[in-house]
Length: 446
Image 1 (cartoon, rainbow, N blue to C red):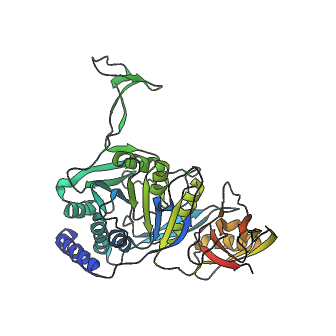
Image 2: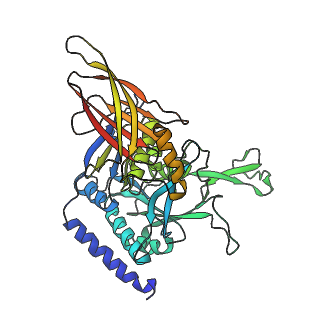
Image 3: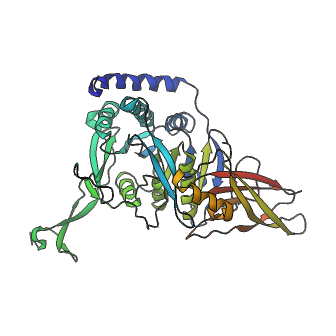
């Protein structure tokens, strides 16, 4: 049976699954980490939230427990594209990069299973969108035509706003068809009263010469004469280059310029943005730079750790929430050099140094072709695999709130940090490697 004939069944499934989900037990997510950020940022940790979990469960939690129903001015979704393949991340390492699996995009029940997954999550996420907000769903030729039918059903055909074509240069070529060099971003509103902030762009005159029309303001640059017009729905923006400072190595990472444009056209400063398939965390990074608040969700530990590292580099305060503390992927050891304690019960100055790090059996590994190089690094210089680590010198027994943190930059990372620890207190240490594996340990000072 053709998928077109199955469309009605998919729509019925989405409606019934939505009702069942809301009648079920509300998922619980609790804080596991909080970062205070640099003094340059005045917003609290609740300005940016990362949630490790499935988008459907997180949407119900945000709606029913966090009180965020109808609060998001922008929701951006960059789900799997139905490529029916694994998406690979690339981690920079001494002597060559390590490729490893970021996430799977294979569906046992084919397009039917994929659309049921996507449709349910979009329906749940709709409840989070403000009446004057906009939702952007980022896909490509694999499934966007079916997704548009779902969006028409969930939001209403009359609430279609735009189909944005993101055009880029990167990608492969073939002799069997024209090179596929664009993605499709569907934009819908929840009502007719949505807020939109028009953007402008250059429109070059024919022949690059001045028109000299009365009342038309013209400009000239190194190319020629142009006017400023409302931006069109075809955006030419380069992908994140291999040498770009933005590059995280995460598979399918989107460029900041693309997300900045989406944020700018749909939100004002202080508005709440959501990304429930957050991947490398580009929306969160851009929202922080642009003075917006954000909630980012992903069920992948690699995605959340990539977001964490990215926001730490920006000095942005945020909190991390999870439905439970997962088993650690890394084990490590530290040495603690205890200095002289301050008088009158004051804190003790301690220097914490990472001594060893070793992935556990459940840890993420590189693909087979890079296995030998990875094993050599583990044997000769395992500390070179550390991407970030942090210390909470005032650990309260539940939430890791770093007082000191270090992130690898330009291939270098500090392996020792000094902190002031209350007498008789505990130090918690978290270590993350370049493959997104992480470990957590607590050390009590008697």
